[in-house]
Image 1 (cartoon, one colour):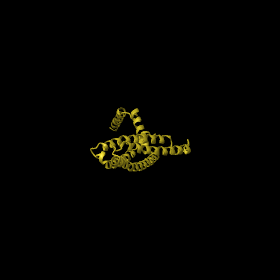
Image 2 (image 1 turned 120 degrees about the vertical axis):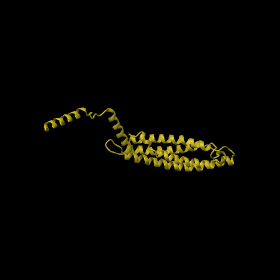
Image 3 (image 1 turned 90 degrees about the vertical axis):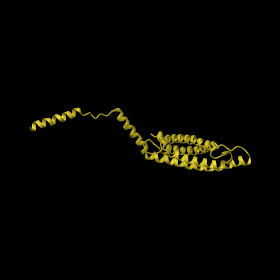
Image 4 (image 1 turned 45 degrees about the horizontal axis):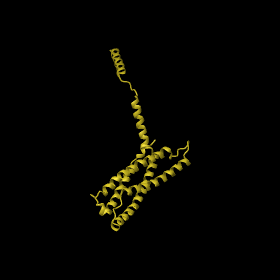
Length: 201
């Protein structure tokens, strides 16, 4: 009786061993694991995250200061053009372009400093955090964020000058203030997005 039961158990185990599908590793599973690993490396790299957001904070501070000064300049230009010289008010698209041009100069000065630090301290055997891939990621982030800010800012400026909301031709002071406030908040939201991950190593 025991021999018969042992024989049945042995046949049952052999049957399970034969019919159980082998645990094979396919190309697609390896590729998906590699993508997940690379994505985790990008999002969890603390050095790149810290430096990228230090640069972003610097850009936000510069842009806020530039837009604050430009708001005062454009308010004065509007008063002179409309009420003193009886001319059409100045367009707001130039407000965005001038602000981003000044901010771009400040960004490239900072990028130059980081590049010089990399040339001075980065070597093939040390682990200095500023390297070529980091600078490339910062530059790509600058291109993407600047393009978004200019594109969406042009939409905001066009809506303010449309006349349906602020009567820009006659009561443009309120429109200029609203445009400046919307643009700086929009720029902050865009700059806080981690777009540097597009080019992260």
